[in-house]
Image (tube, rainbow, N blue to C red; front, top):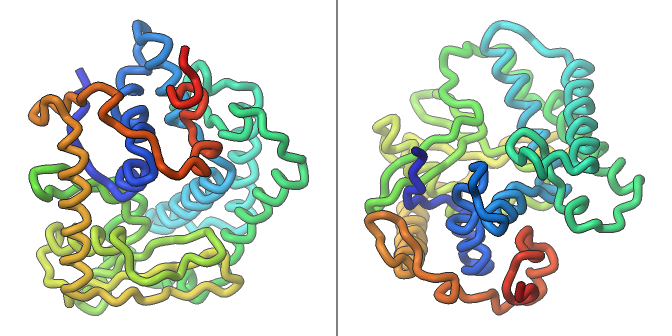
Length: 306
């Protein structure tokens, strides 16, 4: 039987900070929603949990194609740009049609569900076309970058991770991280984080700090032996942007994780078994503008009393 263990990740923390009730629906109410005997409410929460909006969908599919390209390279096969774009278009078309047909209601893990379809948003065809075009541009930008040329020509034996979900332990909790790409270069561990938005070259974040902590533990290197980069695929000629890793960033990341974990655990009736208190202990957001974009809007007690 799968156990719902307590864990932390940057995305989980973001849900919790947005709205504790949203976090409750995502982490606890939805648990077991894949089982045939699940209650209707648990099943609904499970279906809604797996929805993605069009921007997240675009980013996920760009990541998927780059993962395919790099894993093929590691196995000795170069994927031509035309093939990569054809693959991208095919899977996005399949995703879109499956979502529009509401196939995700039967199997959310095998079929994409788009937030815009579930909530019947009036999104015109040109908008959907632009989502696809944005994904195409990201893949094209990746291919034309000097960094991709470097990866194509270098020794793949130095590559460490490609879109692997990894974990480390902090404060007694499992911390999940998913590194887009990592390699050894010049006696250091390099971590590359693909970005698909227009303005994502921000200062080093808690996410980057968590990557660095993982790398130090996993490969037994000091902080000076880790280098992290953002790679903005929305840029026409993207280059890796170095993120300055400092002891202060690591301390701030640890403090953020500890504070977030402490607040999450304070809402557990049985911390050892990760059993939550009742939903009433998980307050609604104080930012109502977030509600209209929340996956769980249709089952939230704030708006639906049934």
